[in-house]
Image (cartoon, rainbow, N blue to C red; front, side):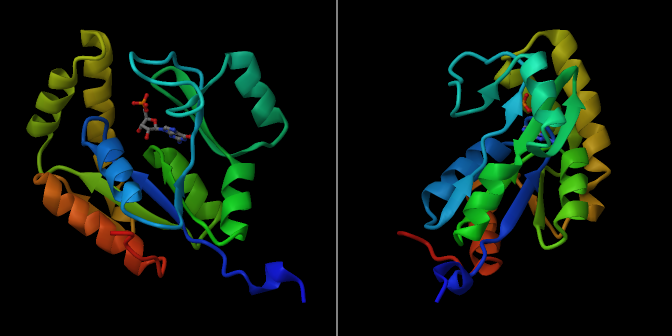
Length: 197
Ligand code: 5GP
């Protein structure tokens, strides 16, 4: 019998939340505690920040390379965000889902809405904090960007928070350990996954 027919397809999780909310740390930590999950590495035209690694944090591409991927229909979704392109590679997502591996996309809200439309079975998680003052503080503390970029991201964050109603679940990250516990619970219960510890 064809082995593919026996494999239960993985679940696609889409995780969004305003910049500075702590999504990346939460996702990284949650995935380190779970078996059978992988995080998709997006393509982007923005430059690498200090400490970011090509192919690990992102596939850093030129605008020409990115546009070629759009043309060749290699992206499940893509957006222009704060002046740069970001996109999810369809092949990575499909290859893993079909092998039964759960895939996590950490993407912004417009891309998330596009994924929900093309893949209605995707489970959408929104990570947020209870107020924007706290978010602004966190963005300033991070200080990896200049003031104009920070202000731009704060505005964007307020816009993004309006989309939380379209998500299947909302996780508040006021307390890190609690947010991590909640994220792990959602990822395991919606995928049939198990904790590896
Ligand atoms: P950053 O520049 O801070 O790494 O990312 C900016 C925003 O783009 C974040 O909200 C991040 O989740 C989102 N993002 C990263 N990769 C993708 C992607 O492939 N598609 C979309 N739509 N958003 C992405």
